[in-house]
Image (tube, rainbow, N blue to C red; front, side):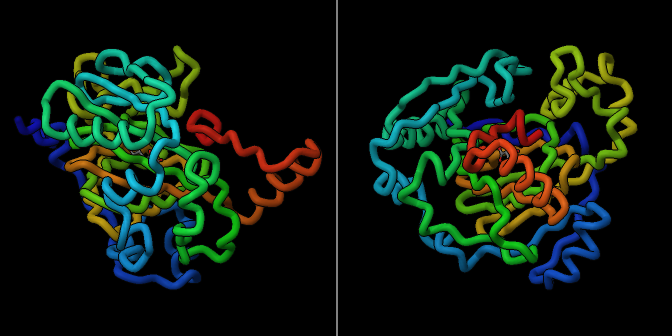
Amino acid sequence: MSKMPYNYFCRQDAAGIESVSAISRTKFRSRHVLPAKPLKILGGASKWKAVRSWSPAYLRNAIKDTPVALSINSKGVFDYNNSALTGPVHVIKDVRFRDAVDEVLRCSDVSNKFCYIQQHSIREQFSCLVDELDYPPWIIYPNVFFETNLWFGSKGCFSPLHFDRSDNFLVQVHGRKHVTLFAPDDNEFLYQNLHDNLPHCSQINLLTPDLDQFPLFKQATAFSVFLDPGDALYIPKHWWHAVYSLETSISLNYWWMRLPELFVHLLRRARKGSGNSAKTKRANAA
Ligand SMILES: O=C(O)CCC(=O)C(=O)O
């Protein structure tokens, strides 16, 4: 049974974002990082090892029995805080990766179950893949990627609208995704979830926005971008984004720091006297 396609009716007015096939670090910094403007780098990662070789079968074989958390939801809506907009997200811990892959693939073919291996740190959880990583060349300080995560999910998985407090590259490795973006200027139209003290999450389910409950949403300006394998998307910090898997999908995301942030980060780390604060999870990044 095939799944319902992503329902774009909610924002048919969405504009595209700027797309280039290559960009120098200097231009990327002046035209995108400093003014905080998203950018799609078309095929920017197409030569990377992950894009050339990672498939569900490849990763199944490489990661084998390493335990992962498999998130399951009946509507495909995966929020990060155990308060799914559409029914609960069940997280099954310690699933062997190869079993999780089988489940993700099975779920791509049914309409009432969606499985997502969300935001698993490559360095912490899949160290066997560290040497296969490439790093985005568009920033000057390539060693400041403090978190690289794997996202592997079935067709129809949806990461609801939220923003992060770090700059990000979302790199598509396998399958296609669609991303909807809103600028930070639209905060007042996006109904931050202040009740649950989750200001980085919107209360709006973009797949079926309730305009009676959230009337100002109409005033927000949506941007829309499709990602094919090899494409990289720069999502500036504080930009809202929601991500939909159009097919079984594998992505990498790279959170990184600008130089002044890096100084503060290193200072804090030195003060704490500990190693890298490796437990940076969604809520902390946001
Ligand atoms: O790909 C996804 O499902 C979510 C990715 C995301 O939110 C991110 O990279 O910040």
